[in-house]
Image 1: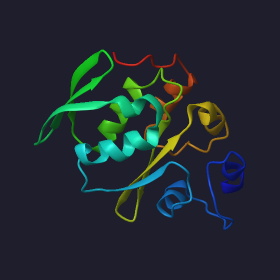
Image 2: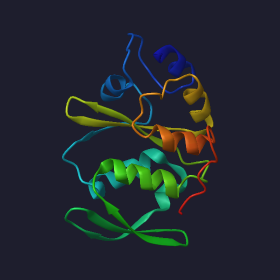
Image 3: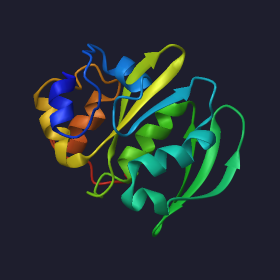
Length: 161
């Protein structure tokens, strides 16, 4: 698995790893993030938008209201909206949805948990279809969103609904 990813420039190292969450946690996936399960969406936003790259870096936080759910008022280009976020995966979903049409922004893959950390992988959209076709992302928690972003199994998302 990692040999294929290394050929695409998405992984490093030589030792075999059979688990993408473990590879991410070990720092072997380019664009991988290991995030504490205690982190809040506002704490993850900066590192995640940096890893997503491109136009994701233009996203601005206008306001944050703590509580459950956390409410974040976001601004990106001409879009301004409030997101109610119950967890980190909700933030990933909203970012993927908002930034779907931006080809210079990676897709955020929720690989799962490893050693009390949430493993996220920011994958260039140019290789997303291939990774899905190869079955490498079959265990992703946000597989339906990734399929929509890649235009596999339905229409690609066009951003904010």
